[in-house]
Image 1 (cartoon, rainbow, N blue to C red):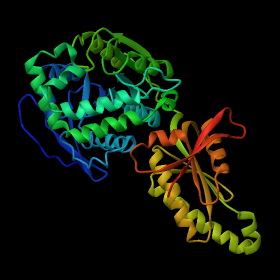
Image 2: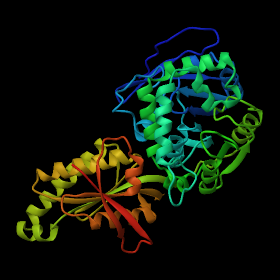
Image 3: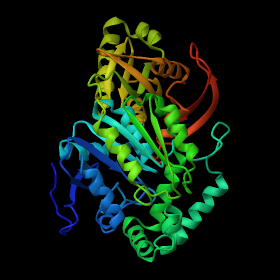
Image 4: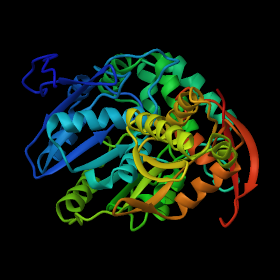
Length: 454
């Protein structure tokens, strides 16, 4: 149920409403009546109403709303949405759930996403996990991974990141901080003063630093190949905050993506020469047809298996074993449903389930361990996230094989996952123990496996 609470009335500012999600109220606005629903996922912090007070931002909103039904949100923990503790910041998965709640509230069944800066990773994850609800994806000044690595040489060094955090907290809410995101307006007093107030109303310095830290620790590179919707990547050639190689990487690794490299030195998408980008977006969204038939989706697969089932069946006898197996099946199905998963199949004494959120899948596995222990049973569980093909009531693809092999490698009572799971649940409170590199039978390459800590 939507709570229609009006936060503020002003002729130039749309009505702000709230939708409850996960116990938090998420602020949102809807502007325009175009045929295309476009949800904007902003950078790490924002404030819906203060944004409209900046003429450049308002112009950009009006431009998008001229051909779209524009859906705007303040992410959980920022702006007009409920605040959270700095040590309990929302994960990517929780943000996806917040977005779904708002889309349901406004009746948007199929939506285009405009992911800006830090908002790009969440937009990419939503598009890959929910292809049936995503018509198109736009990524502006964004990245798949923030830190530098052997195969990712243009990211931030750890020392650079620490300096960034120190500067962020010391300059947060001050007019001087405008120079990082909008160098072309560094000497514009009106803009700089607005920017300082915008920051102060968006988040506290500690919350802002925490959000940036989480954004930098995540890695969604493995999500990109699973994105099936039309994708447009926008990136300024001289972005001072996010090197253009980040945008190029996104475009090269999302199937069929198109990249437009824009002239300019500003990171903020509504500053500088925005006409080219805005025209590209309008053409992209109003001239694209998306197939309604989708059978590829990013999913977290969970395999479970009873340890020592053959020996136990022999000891108990057929009738008692079947009764115990039925009890096991009941509690496992219950936990899968409780964690919003889908049971795909049962194979003797094992389960295969899929989830659209990796953290819920891991927590489901842990809950299943606890539930079946009351029956005197012990399980092993394995999880992986990747692209799967949905065929009738089954799922197919290499990700399914990987999940099965990970489960087979697990010890009694253990939940074992690939590092791709760990990368997507940063900030969830889940803890992992690195098990190093492993060969998985029948799967090419070596895989970093992790054990879920109690």
